[in-house]
Length: 111
Image 1 (tube, one colour):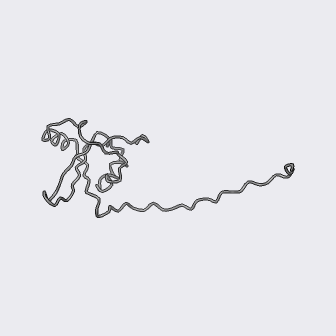
Image 2: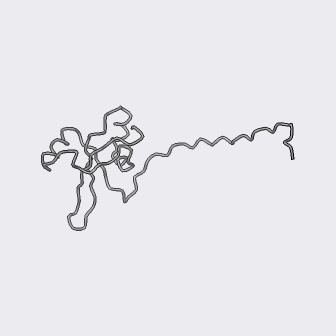
Image 3: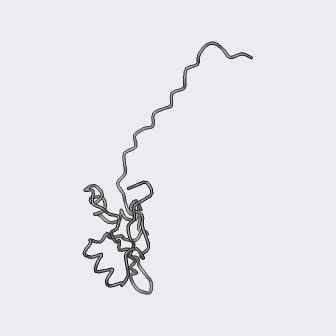
């Protein structure tokens, strides 16, 4: 069978509807994250007696950071978040509240 000489039109891909961006609402099981100022970060590192590089890391694009109400304002203002510390507060049955610290690192996409 030979191909027909008439050209077939290309099928148009339907345009995707624009979905409005929903505001972030933290889940009740997500622990509170608090981005520390540079002065607070220095005090915490002195108290812990360690270097920031030795702390566990958290990506700057991690959704848990959105639980801090100042996060979006910091990102929009262009504030440099990588290198800052984050305090994560989790409820604990034995201690009442467990506090962990993380170092914000840039994500692979270059944020």
